[in-house]
Length: 66
Image (cartoon, rainbow, N blue to C red; front, side, top):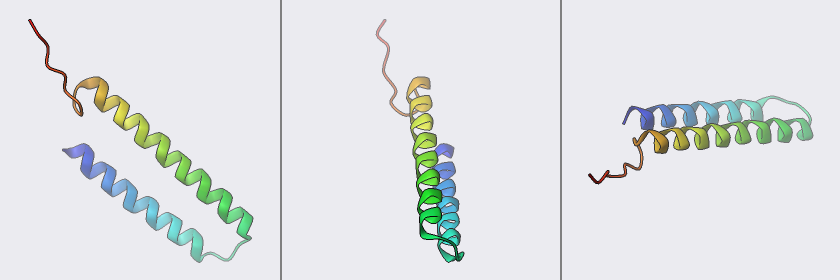
């Protein structure tokens, strides 16, 4: 379960970062580029986390037959 807490904390931090970016006065195209980069990075990080958990048997354990 510690991975779930890590994911929730990371998503809260990313949400705060996106909120701060919205508050900064800057060109709209730069803001949208930054938003897209942050969201893509978080999606890649989540996919890597899910794949690593699935591979180690932590997320989707597969029983072994003997």
